[in-house]
Structures are given as structure tokens and as C-alpha cells.
View 1: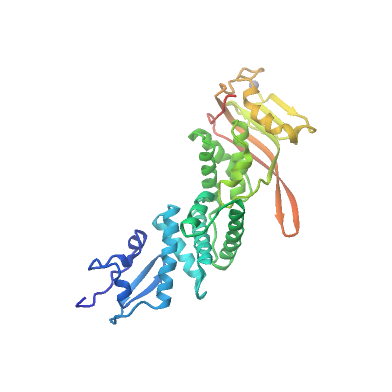
View 2: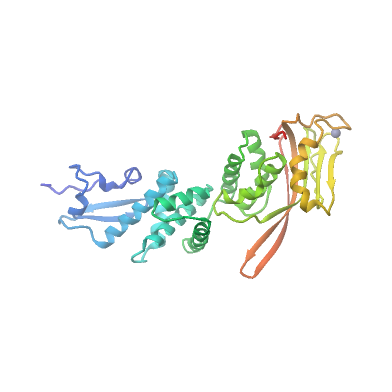
Length: 360
Ligand SMILES: [Zn+2]
């Protein structure tokens, strides 16, 4: 190098295609080691400026590059995209400012917590599998369920700190919808059925991911899909099943009778044209045990047309869903013990909304 050149100004495009220091004028990938460039993390990118002396980067500079390398690797593994990576970088550097040397495990956790938090701020749900994969890409080891549980706990604790200390706020409505879409994909629903799931999730007044999961449980039950317990592991944070359905009313057809009144321990199908109850299972004794089966059979047992007014309710493959009402309770685990919260929700769907029903 005869004339000291100013380092190319950092840009999100540079950093997110890889670290900017690999772009050297001479094509020498080791130039940073030999040069006098100062590294500044100006999130979302690292800026390099030439100080005119050929010295190696300082420990602090190397540390910042290491942080960006970790973040970039995780961001690639989770397919974050430049904007998401930029937001995560901003959170990450603000959060670790003044922390001194961070060991690899701590850095892995902080990077992942920053990414999940940044995604939530943008209203995007993160899949649990993506988090586990990124953790392994960063050199972490997850050999069994116990390892994953430990990671879940550590990451959640760190995210709580990040939300309070870095003043992060999630986009709750966006997150609810994004989680509901992810779960619709997991259930293999077509677009029309996914729209029913998303509408139901939006109508549930609960924490965003809980609301999405409860909605997905209901749709899984009434469309005859696999066990609802697995839904709790799909979206971050993975948890044990903590909601129980206490009652469900489905209003079918394309009439105007949309009142989905729900009774405890009862599964009901109502005709939306005449309002008559087409099917009902109200057995408080057996409900907690048989409801899964009852719900599974709900729409295949319900007639395709209303026996009273003849309105079309579905064709055995698709149900014309007009409204859904539900009651459920949520188990809340706290340091003071477990408590139960009882909840209700109702949604009216536009005329013509349909839900795929799996034939037995
Ligand atoms: Zn009817």
C-alpha cells in the first residue's frame, strides 16, 4: 500500500453480505490485521476509518468484529435480512456496551436474544427450530431436550432484561398475526383456512403468541388435525401446553345469525340462517376427557345442511364458518405458584369464509 486509502464507508449492504473488511482494494483478506483501520460499531454497520499508522486492530476493535461475526452468522442461519440484522445489531451493541470481555456462550445468547427481540419489534414471530439451529451455527451444543430447555430458560431471562433495559417493545398485533400464520403453515392449512385462524387469533385478547396458539388449537381440533400439544413448541418461546378448551360454539353457513354463545363444557354447532342448534354435546362429566374426540368429529358429524331450514353448512370437505366462540382457561406459572385465568373470545367471519375439514 503506497498511499493510505480511506476505508470504504460501511453500509448495511456491505456488512450484511459479509463483514466489510473482506472488501480490500488489493484483494488481500488479511489486510485488517496489518492495517491501521479503526473499527467503530455504528449499528447497523461497522465503520472503518484509517488512522495513518500500520498497527493491528486493538483488542476492543477485534472484540467488536467478533460480535458482528456472531451476529451475522446467526442472522444468516435465521434468514433475517438486512433490516432485521440492522435492528438486532443496534440492540446488541446497546445491550453489551461496557460489558468488557464476553465469553462465547454469553455472546451466543445475547446475539440470539437481540435477534428475537428485533424480530418481535417488527412484529415477526420466530420459529423455535430456527433459534436452535442458529445456536448450533454459533458453536453451541444442543444434544437433547434438556439442553434445549436450558437454552429456552436462559434466553427468556435475557430477553426480559433486554425488554426492560433496552426499552424494547414488541409489535403485539403484528406478532400475533405472524405467529398465527406460522402455525397455519405448521398445520398445513390452505389460505382460506389460514385466514380463519388469523381472524380468530386477532379476536383473542391474550398475549400475542398465546392467542395465536389457542386459535391454532381450535382450528386443529375442528379441522381434524394432529394433537394440539405440539403447537406449543413451534413458535419461540417453546412451552408446555398451558391452555385448555372449556367450550366451543361454531356457527356455520352464510346467514346473519352470528351469535356464538358458548356454554361451559359444551361443544355446539349452530345454523347461521335460522339459529337452531344443529349439534350439541353437553356432558360436563365427560367433556374434559372426550372433548378432543368430540371436536375432532365435530364437523364430520354435523349435517351438511341445516335439518330445520335446509341452509347449506358445508360439504364435508369444507365447512362454511360464520362465527366461532370459545372459552378456555390458561395456566399461568409464576414464582408464587400456578394460577388459572379463564378467558372468552368470539369472532364473526365474513360471509363465505371456509375451513378445510379433514375427512376421517
Ligand atoms: Zn338453519
